[in-house]
Every structure is written in structure tokens, then in C-alpha cells.
Image 1 (cartoon, rainbow, N blue to C red):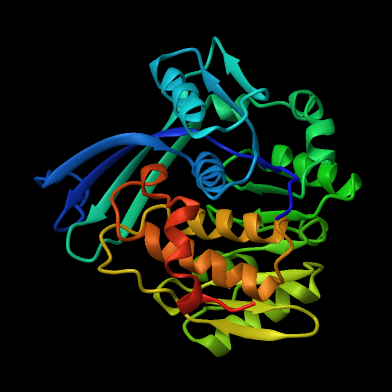
Image 2 (cartoon, helix red, strand yellow):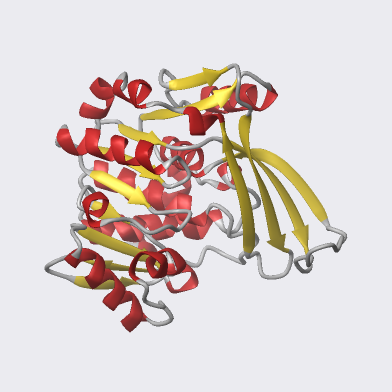
Length: 312
């Protein structure tokens, strides 16, 4: 097992999750069946998940000097995530996300405000160069301002550290940015935003992934929800089935679980195909539970599924 850590740059946001039987329309109020508050934000969720899977994690972000920021630091202390580069802002509030969950299907709609994380600077990222250089992989997302994301990718790329970009929430990216991505992990809607191609089938997914490879990405892992994931490189195309760990309760954070699993597996030297299978197992377990960070499984839980889910 590789002892190198993982560097993750992203957002911490407090998740305010509401379970409802349908979304309200503008001007309407609907009654919810449940409310939960907990730690969230894609980078934060991925950090917690990777730590629970046994990785040493350096998390690069910024929170406010407020109660939500205190929750962030307490969470990382409990989960064993390094916070040397979790900066504080006295003038910005910690990020927050409103999550609406379909109480029957477990599907979700999310609005996030990154808050203090939007004030993360390139100079602060540069303070973590030594830790990034010593990491097995560097992973980030698109909840931070794009120039900050690009600076992080550029830094890792220049240091020879493999990069993972989880392009969420969806937005257009130029070829220069895509060329900084060793691994790109869009879902269907994100792939459509990047390529202009609707992803409704495996053939669509393969076509979109091929277009992204042609634009400079070295490996594309397109996540397909209940259909699993499609892995495409210059030399292979593999469809990996989703892992069924039980009834789906909440899909919020499934993508973060997958990305964390992928990063940890790659850091341990697994092949890309096996790493994607590992990510599917992590995601498959997470959707059987409520919440984002709280739903992330621990490494010991995966061992019981090992034989059924992936083979070396």
C-alpha cells in the first residue's frame, strides 16, 4: 500500500438537507419530512472519504471565523484530515449548501455558496507546494473560482504530480485547462457541458469521453449514476457496473465518494480500471446512507465486498 498522501483542494460548506416528496415551484412552500445539518462541500467530502479509506490527506481550503468554520475544523480533527492549509477569513462567512432530496428516489438538487473558500489565494496555495509535491495525486473540483482551480492544477502538473479534476459543478473549460488533467471525472451533465454532447447512453458516454481525450485529457472516467462508470484512455474503453450495496437512500455525495475512492486506489498503485471499480464500491455504499461526509464508508467496510466487486 502506497504511503504517499493525497492533496485535495476544494470547498467546505455546511449542508442543510431537506427531504421532500417534490420540489417547490417559485413562490410555493412545501412541507418537508426531514431536515439534517452536517459537513459538506465537494473537496471536504472527498477529504473525509479518502481519510476514512486510509489515506493521509492534506486539505487546502478556507473557512470563516464562525461557528460553521469551527464545525469544519472539528470534523477534520475527528477524521484525521491535515488542516495545515485550511486558512481562515475574518471577513467572509463559511460556505453553505441547501440540498433538496427526493424522499422516494433519493435524488437531489443542490445550491451551494462557497463563502470564504472563494477568498482562497494563489499565494496560500503556493504555501502547500511541498505537500503537493510529496503527494501521490492532487485532486480538485469547480466549486472554487476557476483561476484558483487552474493555479492548483498548474502547480501540481509542474511538480509532476498526477492531477484529478472533478468538473463539478458543470461549466465550460478550455483546452489549456483540460490539458492539465491526468484524470477527468465528469458525470453525464458535466460531460454534456464540456462537450455539447447529450449523454443518454453508453455510446454517448464513449463519444463524449473520446472528445475530451482529443482535447488533451489523458484519462476520462465518466460517472453514470446507477449505470456505473465508463473509463476511456487512448488504449482502452471499459464500462464498469455500479455496485449495489442495498436500497438507495440518498445520492448526495456519491460523486465525492467515487472520486475519493478513485484517488485512494490510484495512490495505492491500482490500475485505472481497478481504481474505478473501487470508486464504484465506495459510492455504492455511500448512497445507502443519509448525508454527504457522514455517509462515507471506512476501509474495513469495503473488505466484505472485495471479492464481489473488483478483482486484481
